[in-house]
Figure 1 (cartoon, rainbow, N blue to C red):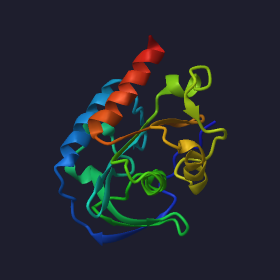
Figure 2 (figure 1 turned 45 degrees about the vertical axis):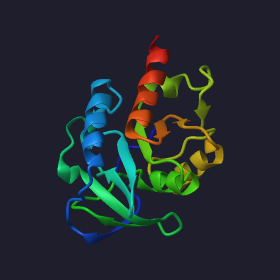
Figure 3 (figure 1 turned 90 degrees about the vertical axis):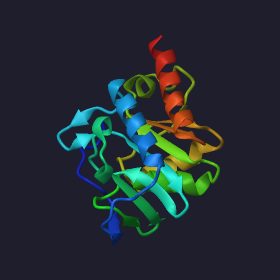
Length: 193
């Protein structure tokens, strides 16, 4: 059973408490709303599940911890300028803590330099039928936001652009936001039939 959400599991150093500015944020807002309407970012007491990110010249922009992907505003974005998996620390520009899955995004961007976008949503159909459908799945379940979860994903990522994290959710990788988002919609549509 997935761990109950308790916040981020890393230290955050704020370089500036400013809202990051990037034209790509508009596309994350669009995709957050679209994926939410499909029921892939369930709402909880703390906000909603899931997170979205894209690379920038200086790092990557990611949704803030507890953001509701269905109604993102400018303050819901944080630019991660550096991250350390070893020290569980991130350096950011933004007004809020970055997503609790920031370490996962950090690990994937480090392993796959060609990837520009990562979307993480909670597709219960893909998670529940992963092996039956032949999707690439992690072998073990690990707590959200943990270095162990990031390491487990890195074990199997290879050149795969759609990964199911056991009893948790999925990540979709792409060169563009549209590629990552359309992949999620395509897999979800095939599963639902």
